[in-house]
Image 1 (tube, helix red, strand yellow):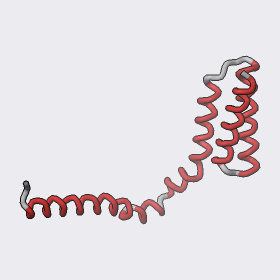
Image 2 (image 1 turned 60 degrees about the horizontal axis):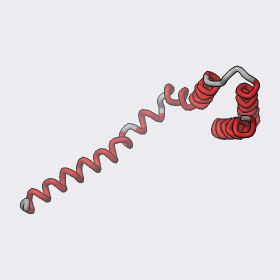
Image 3 (image 1 turned 45 degrees about the horizontal axis):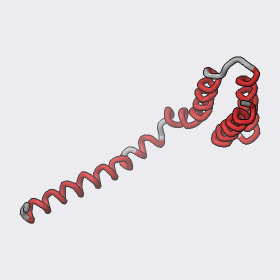
Image 4 (image 1 turned 135 degrees about the vertical axis):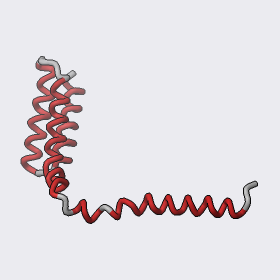
Length: 107
């Protein structure tokens, strides 16, 4: 059995490392908040993610009526939802849900 001093030393090291790892991100918050790059990414990333999801979905879509119709309808719904609500999450969930529904009903 390790000695009491050894156990207290190990617990101290564990405490300091855990506290440091949890406190370290807060030390970098102030410089990051004023970053123009992060502000730019925050404004443009949702649209970029939607474009990536669209390309990924349409790349594997067969060029038949049964394959293209659900994808085209979901794409139109996603664009319409985004123009209507300006909310990327609503657009992604709405378009994806419609696509899954139409693929299940159509195919």
